[in-house]
Image 1: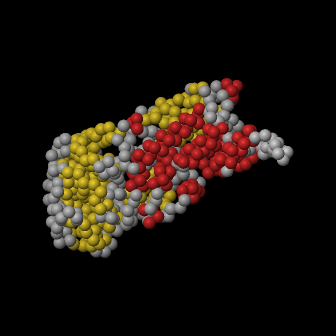
Image 2: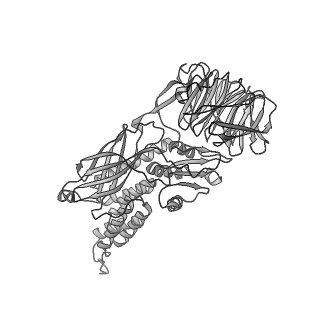
Image 3: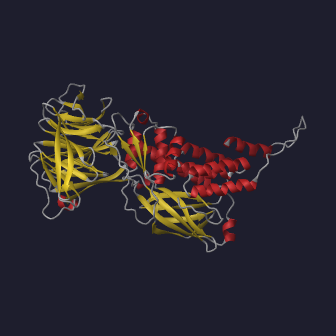
Length: 609
């Protein structure tokens, strides 16, 4: 339909109106310009209320009424860009430029579409360059803001794990487990020789001990100040264990340091499902494990190396050499940190194939690593200090994703107010300072300013258990609540494991535009790297228990109001040579953004979706 419309315009302009041989009179298709413009007006307002499907439908109707109305392609491209339909958006903008090649805005829009698409491709493939890595030391009591005198005293800690702001730390030689949360007094639970406490949810965890005992533990609250941890023995492995991680809803992976293998356990029955050891017959002594939703990272003291292994195919995909490694933790699904006994920190890039020391000996007496949301922490052996590890990325490689939509306009007084949401992939650590902005209409720059925070009308949690075509998937998601959700929970199944990278790339575009976090509810099976990276960069979580409807915060971003001063009407209308678009561009914390929105000059209707 789109290509036919463009060809029709060109054909009827160039062709003779009378066939030379037959004398047949050709008549141009009739255009109902009034009805077409009515549909364009409705399409603009759908766009400004973030109802992109309503916008596309009205554009289709406008084109049927006036096949020569090429501005439908420009607005369609902007709409498809917001939905993450990169290929369709570029196709639409190319159709528009075939007829309206003088519209320089369209070339800028095309360039921005390509820039945003290519950035997301790089991130989803696990490739993004780090500018620097720093470690900041703080006393543990200060870091967690613990009550006076409440700092836990440890003899010799094992491994640490975090979930939902709660840090579980095993004190192996002290025969206890600590539960530490900011602003609260730590809780202490007695258990013999714990090496790992693996949280499954806010009140359930698996505990592994050095002597091979595996327990399912339940946290209960007796009163506001007292918590109890009840233990139920799941199974026993007659060996010496060093660590444990959960890799599926019902699968626990434990490291058997004495027998030199990893053991897969069913967390419901305690049954051994299988094991793994390297194929090269070398001595294998697994000391530490970490799972990031894509691969398992293993510290192997036998070969003095870090190994990244696919836990489902049981294939080694990466190996890096370093002496006396102590612990490992994933920074993203494609990169992990390894901690050395001398306090050095190494970074493994499993896609780039690199393994480098990035901090030399600074993490003094540190024993274990853990991740709390997007923070990487290292605890020292006595639990005196915490090192907070922070990476910064090359800002020139990043872009912010802007989402502008109308609040109100007063054309008589010459003002226009917009709601603006700015989102950046969480690979960037931002302070979210007031952004610098500029506004343009046609060839003129307009005075504009950022006016602080604005309320963001968030949706609910949207749970997905089966995948369809991208268009149907998006329509179902939007129609479920009549607006875009704050979070998507993708439940693992064969269709999700087989999701294409193109599908994920499109979904990433929508999520970064609308501020949607993507959670992964893992069961028992593999995930593609692109999907694990999407969850990471959108601020999502990897879960091993069903989600709660109350958990609806989306991707962290900056919400505000933009006020634009308009010139006199005669100046404004003089600039309307093509489809009327307002351009907003600027930067937030040095990261650039650009967006365009259509303007209609008719009285306001309710647009507070």
